[in-house]
Length: 466
Image (cartoon, rainbow, N blue to C red; front, side, top):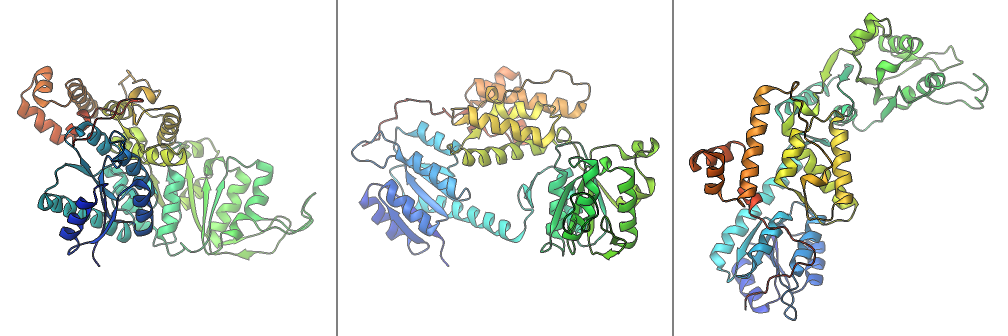
């Protein structure tokens, strides 16, 4: 099947010429205005779109292509959009790339050159689609967990291995690190994936209600028990029961849980009849259970029954490589939810996020991005939009990482001050241009990010070349 491409331009002659040159290799669709282009894209979901920034012959200063770009990427973020520009539209084209365009090409178009660009865009789109369909952990995501650091990739591999068995798993880590997401991923990757995944927060349910919530009760077992009720254990039959905040479980219920792990049977409150169940147990805690055992708050035998396979999720400050993809994920999510144009993070914002200590971990990062999206009126989130202050207390920061973070921060600041001109930035930093290029490559810094002029409200759009 030939890949689908959509050509959008207000010049019919240009569209005809392009169609003739491309239809041997692609299934080509054309549109001459915003409305027709959006209709065609919604219907065909083209892999690649070439898009003229100005789609109005009546008003060439109206850059309707930017509006269309945002709507296309809002629907299908994986689509590769190539922006076609006039001679005087370079700044607007750069802004389009910051909004998510794959690349831009300056008119007049040379078919052979544009063919190369389209072929590359289509190839990247196909790779992305193939990886997304064949392997859920491709890129930065694995069953809804975002991460690209070595520690998170190790966790992804752990999930794949442990999911195939029925052994109990004890997940530990600070609050906000994503323990429930990991438990969910284990269930989704397991043979039990089509059966229930039941979540119980042991710290959120009052102690006097938790037993009946977990094990159910018989009619007349206590005042108000007018009917028989199944508990969470029975609801999870053939599936997985996730016990979050297991350290909050009172001693009497610890005994009942231990008994289930030993003989796989429960008794409802008010009954002496044992019910045999097939339930996998995954537990999670942010407490030091070993210390709780010493203080006689948690049973040692239950601890080792739960901890058949232990998993420690590192804090976000210990996996700095995950901060940027997480921030970008939340940025995309909340831009869509709040119906705001697709935005990106400025270099300074990325640096601020990386240097923050994140005591609240991923949950705190999500809240910061959500708030910034709601309050910011710019197409690019700035450091000041985040409401974070860089922490000056570095006593708990690894020295190697601190050196790397400071180096990245200074390089980005020098590039920002000099608008992406490497020779000037190198002079300010007191190093050679060759050394600066090596550092830029080492830290995967995008020079283009510092050459873009953001679109500001009421800025007069550049005139289109005739």
